[in-house]
Length: 279
Image 1 (cartoon, one colour):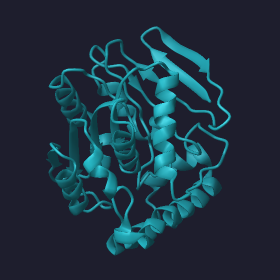
Image 2 (cartoon, rainbow, N blue to C red):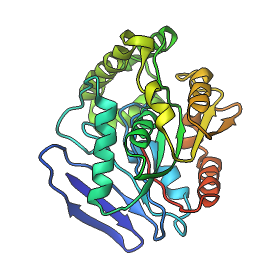
Image 3 (cartoon, helix red, strand yellow):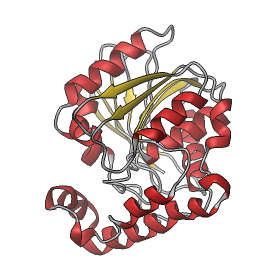
Image 4 (cartoon, rainbow, N blue to C red):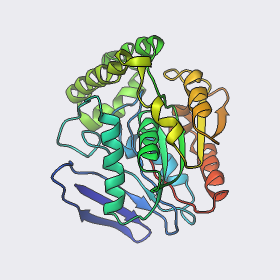
């Protein structure tokens, strides 16, 4: 596992070796008690990286309050080889990888920020490792797959039909062939949940989430219908819900980082132990 740490003192290369995991690319910034993991597995730019998907947010979060760690899961970003695959337990596997990584980095307790597939991974981590997770913010996540979702996923299978703005950063990172192959594998991988009872991904785990949770939904999200956010809000006890009107969160993250970073900072500071992790 290859980890890169970034602090106020500059870049500190560090190697962590694991027989189970590929190299993992992880920048951190800041100096206080908040920690974060960034997992850039999204349903639109599903195979991105911390650099391609969250750079504005990572720069905007208050470094006087938080230390932020960003990671690329196995098969994504700079965490290659191996190539990305999608067994039925890939979300649970990613959650374990994230928690194992943060424990290896000696963080005693963390919080989670997760977008789309990263939000699902955060839900798995919060449910499976409740004593290790302090709080969580997720957006663009879903706990099950419907026929409507499956139609949406099939609509992004062919990357040649993506807009140039969406495709080019990932093509530059992966090359066209790997991007196209991984997109098709992702559509099949997420689609397999449709054939499980109730399309279940993690709906059975939501009542097990114990940490304070903020659920954010962009009303113009083209890939994740509002009912998914509503369901997670209903099932995660004590969770809070925030809508972003007239925007999809892809725009908020990539073009307008300020408001989203401010919401995350405000939510963190209201808690007793600030700590954040990007999934």
